[in-house]
Amino acid sequence: MTHSLRKQAVLGVAMAALLVLSGCSTFNRDWKAAAASPTPASSIAGRWEGKWLSEHNGHSGKLRALIRPLDNGQYETRFHAKYGFIFSFGMEAKFDVRPAAEGQWQFSGAEDLGKAYGVYRYEGKASVTNFFSTYKASFDHGTFQMTRPK
Image (cartoon, rainbow, N blue to C red; front, side, top):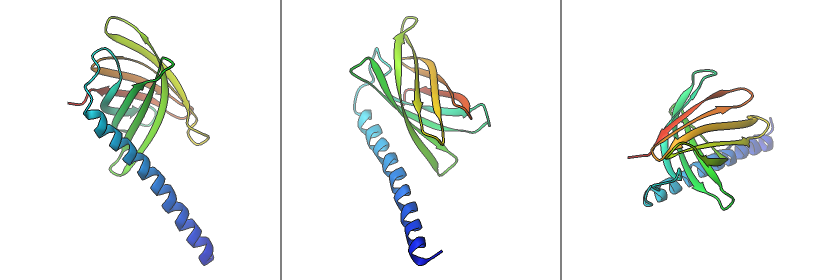
């Protein structure tokens, strides 16, 4: 590999790391800002934390989410997941939410995460204090379980 190609490769890796880390810092900044807002008494909006579990391979880790209502009746959900000690990743999904039993909501949604990960489909239910969702993709499936942070 020539010096020029090596320099371009290092620059490319550095840029990719910067994008990943800046996405994480944006989520963390928004997570801290949302802590100042009261938890909605009749909505799934706000902060959530818990864990994810892949039923395909048994991998698991910490999971946080920020949920906010959109003007069209959907909810935007930003997830931030950890795997191991150093790996983290974020993803977003839009959920269609509808009332279920008293004090609960059912939701579903799908998000195309690109060629490498495919389409993730979500389905679940939440109350003001508990969130449970299944996820399915072409190569993985599992669960998200979260509660409101203390």
